Image (cartoon, rainbow, N blue to C red):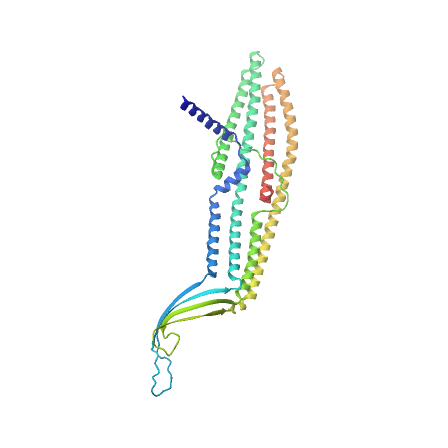
Length: 424
């Protein structure tokens, strides 16, 4: 009995959890987050980070001791000889076949900031790639908006269709009473039944449309959306402030990258200083007059200063300046087009707001006329067709208001998306 009781409690808890999961509505913000997390392109963010990390680690090895091993075996047609004869002394002759193998260890002391600038350049490039990825991911919001508000519109239309059915059934009840009293014909009831079937067909079409939208949204967010799962109608969105789209960050990081490239040009023309130690084995070694195989070593300080970069530095900086101007042109073009879109979208929001004001007045009037016609139908003062005409007129008015309300809400969030995520 204890095990049975525990089992029943567990089943009850699971059922309650399932009902709670179905009753919790999904918000638009949750859809944004889930869509970004489950979009395949999101994996590229980790690839960019890892690539940048490996590249920076490779650059860091430039400050570590560098080991070089070289070897050579040569044969030459002539060797250096001492053109002096000393009685009783034999001056050794260098062999024409010579051998040398050596290893050199060097340590950079001063590189003019070349490596640090290269690291900064790599970080800037990674930031640009990441923001470009954010631009692609940001486009998901537009698609989520269309699907999310499409489902909300269908839900509102389904609710309005249910209200229409109630009005038709109310008319059917009154018509049946009139038929029983001999004041109406059976055909009047048939007309209402036909209208009820048409309303049922609308429900079937809207349900299928909702399922199609829900299936597409489910693919984006990687979550099952059945008929029991509701979407939470978002509050009105107010988009104020400046444009903060990811594209603006791309332009910013591109400009910063060019500034780093300018510093790399300066570091390229800076003298480089390093320590070195070379040890080897060869014939001849260091003494050119010693024709035996011997070991040797050399140590010291090495200065490298490549002046060839000075030939092109001026033109390289001119190229960077042109690139900087090109980025600014792209930025201004983006802002111009975005502001143009924002003006159109603001006009859309204002238009739907004005339409809703008249929609409310029309619905109020149509509801009043329908209620009057309902009373008239009960009294036999109007026909079934007259009653249906007013019922359908009110339904059309309410349907128009539903469409305009959802369209205004979607226009607000589309406007906010166009402005940028900081307005959320």
